[in-house]
Length: 149
Image 1 (cartoon, one colour):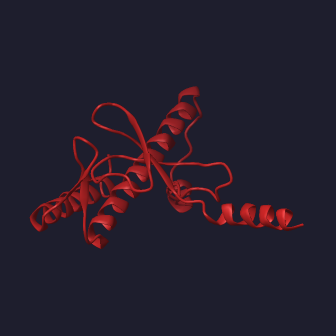
Image 2 (cartoon, rainbow, N blue to C red; image 1 turned 180 degrees about the vertical axis):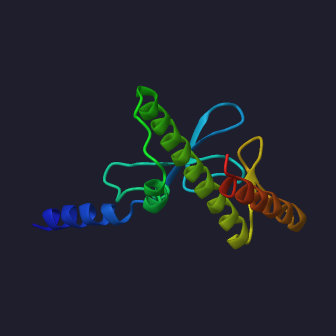
């Protein structure tokens, strides 16, 4: 009976212990995994079995009034392809914007920031380096999230 209770407790606890795992490619081209991606590296969230889902960027809402105000054009076969491409571009731009905002937020909220060294060891950034990274991250947010092309 004790074994059954122990197994049930371990199974319940394992669901609570799940965490976010990031995946990125390092400078040598090797795929790396970890709970915190290095600063300045594009990392994606890995969907693990049994996880509650990941925070994906939602597509931008469309404005129904502006679509209704435009005159209707005859549909051509290329309109569907163009709309699909436009939707893909919008989704990619939203994801890039969310990634840039997340990086900026981590740089603003972080106290001891580091980057991965050549051997994988942590190299802590000085105050000047952190400030420069913050400025670059803010520029990235402004250019990616506010661009129209």
